[in-house]
Image (tube, rainbow, N blue to C red; front, top):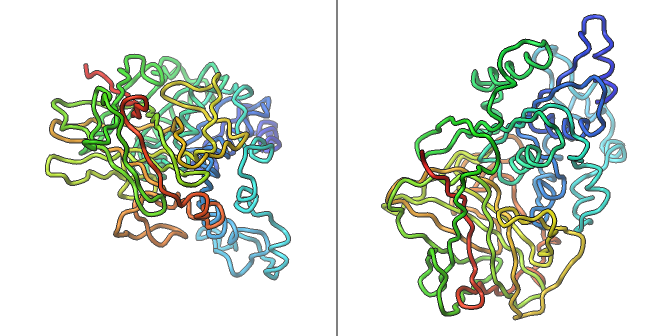
Length: 453
């Protein structure tokens, strides 16, 4: 990409200013090439683009995601040079997208590497992940980072981290909803990109430099409310800690005086805690985090956290995810043996795990763990309730809906699952897990409540 950027800048039809715009894979690559600092790259729009190959997509909280496996086989293999007549035909040019040459399967296999298998044998963070991740200290180009509230399991975290961590002095964060691809092509998305690039590439004085640095489509149960903000997380956030109560199964404003516990079978069970009905409309926008006190009968435990919204009749309110049409509000993950934190990079609302060593559990011993829950936005109406579910397996609904692309069906988490049999072997992750609350073990959920004007 570096060479392509510099080539484009040198063409007689070019003014020497090169911009990048792309969604998904074409956004991920922008973070990487920006770190190489091509001299003629002057602006870029990374629309729904992950940035940390370990934390954003290969290993959520240390747990292997199988998304890359299904994506690579379903969407990359048919585009490999040599796939020939077995591949797709470009509807515009009529040409084979993988080229005219057709190679045998064994030769195609020798000509590629499998990123899923590489990640499968690398549980800890190493150079293989690092070179495939953004180096925020070297990303200095002006950029517009556009994320999706429904992008749990892939892109959302990268878009937010880019805005918070990148060295760029001129950077903007936009977050929207709906499907993964929709707003990149709507009038809303096109106008946003046009204003940004007209300012940087064409030199038009259109006021973009005075645009608010954070542009949010705040999520309601029946739509979105566009709002400009000055920072992320929002400075006026009231960080509100809700304490888990094992005796009542509730989320309360005060911790229980006495210690209690809830237990579940990791591979098929979980425990849920619920707030009282909200008395007034309450906005929750920003990152969440959970502090849990847990034990396991085995030497490790995978923790899957899900935040959901329910109406006064007890019916769940679901939201369009990046791919799955019935997503929850937010999700987070942590392998307990990966609980080690980086104290310099962690905050109460965004724990940052090093993933550089395993810290196995001693069976039945209680451990304090901090779980990152990816950012969200929801305005909770009066009478509605929130729940936090902690379980030892992926969040999946009992029924399914049709999927997209290589994914035949979705059940709540889209294709962002963690079901590799080796990475999730029962002797390590199939024990009985206890969640302790109150007294000396005040498990809690930290929620970003935003005061309404």
